[in-house]
Length: 211
Image 1 (cartoon, rainbow, N blue to C red):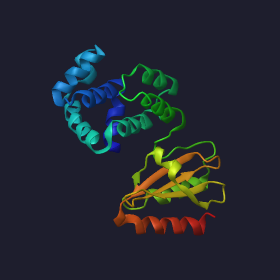
Image 2: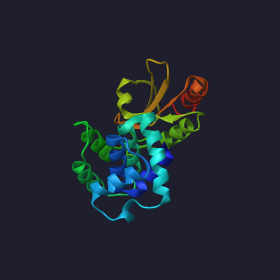
Image 3: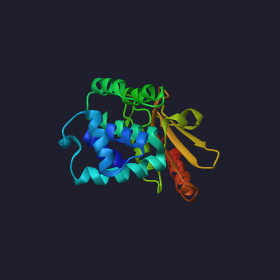
Image 4: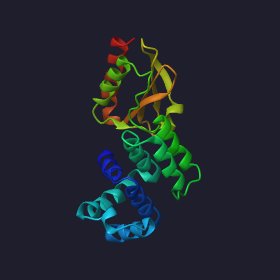
């Protein structure tokens, strides 16, 4: 989903409107682009081109796999890295979203990076970044949602004061999170059953070298 989110993020607000239009109407392809342009009231060039036409198929797949909120969260995770946060917060206020709380959750993503795979804060030390790099190399690791962070429990306190936290969801899928010394999530990921031994090995390595 990361590559799809990057492509949507590159379009800016028109990309967000395209996603919302497709989620609300079920339209795809040229029909979705036409509907999004009607909403934007802008020229065809805003969402023109074969590349965007092909992107609608990827958006359809992403919406089916992860849903609207997770897709928008991923897009804003990319945009917050290169666009003024104030501008993005104002943009979110203008959006027509179906869930009344979704705007607030997206704003938290902009402000704190909640929901983003890796969030560097002033309290993110070199050790923490090395630990995140180890976890990122685990085969099958996929970004976890910040809403699951509160369900996790600390299992390792790193020498810099950060913590590694884990959680197994009702389906038995292993999640791992890293929190900075102020207990703010800076990383989250999960693996399928087949890759759980690899995650266990990474956690063992972290316990040996970073505590």
